[in-house]
Length: 409
Image (cartoon, rainbow, N blue to C red; front, side):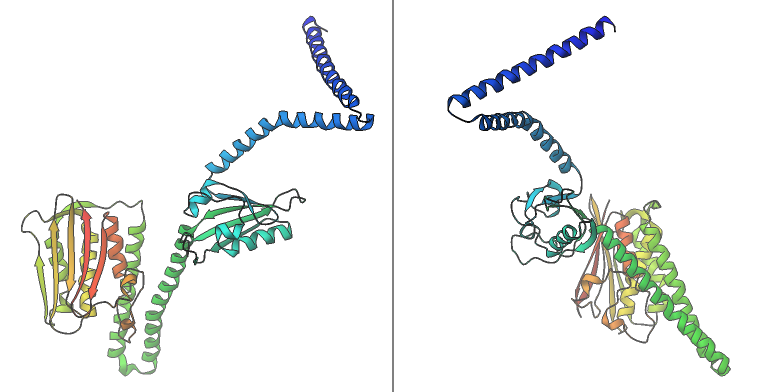
């Protein structure tokens, strides 16, 4: 054994001996004290053990407090909400992200889970996890709360994960909450889009196939069948083009082909394109644009789509003569405000919040006549937003319906 190793061993022995001697002296002093006051030897020994354990616990208390604060700081940094409840479903710990999800300054500890979160689904999930002694994951949709002080979480989706704490004697559990509203709504939009697109594609295909069968049995109906088949074939082509247009607008990796163009000329081109729809009707167009400086930097292709869809929509919804469609633009130093309005029948108030929804059609659309694809206004909204602009609609049935687009310059 080297000299250094021997010196280290000797130091350790002396340190241990000093510790043992100090502990022995402390225990002997404590035993002398309890004996002096008349306590039996066995009771004195037990008291010595309890005092020693209490001293050790007191020494460990700052360390445990530090660990508690450390883990609490970590839980406050994660994005998910975390709750720890006891066997009586009372909250013992809740981190700050959970309070942010619930739109409140903090979650109060000591109160029951149902009092704080105000949704029985969460309490039921925790109780099930404790009873079955397993981890449970479920997506829930919050219900509206009748409590005036509660946050309005109605309609929001949360992914909930609950599990009992490993120590079965505790009877407690932890709960993790994650707001997945955006993901759930995106998935719902995808399902609705597929269902609606499938329906829109199936209808004209069924009609075309039906007329093919009719032609086989009655060749004399050829002209009528061909007209109908052509009309629905064009509808299929338009639907496909509109779906591709929305797909391109929602693809963030596809940049806009932004170039300056004259808005008045863009509007006039859209009117000329729709000439077959309005030239045989008593429709009047009023254009109110500056003679100079009426320029907008954007993707001309999409602005053609915007004005064509808005004008076509007004023409389709108002078959009566005397329709006046007004298109105007006002420029300032920071933005351009474009309006398309008509004096037709208007949009019912109960339909107005949904007109930009894909495939949405009001009650008046449910007829045997072939209408549009139901994507026109959705394309308009997406195209305006792609230019960092906003669009809104107002309508007074029988007086005026106006679409207002505000685009930053």
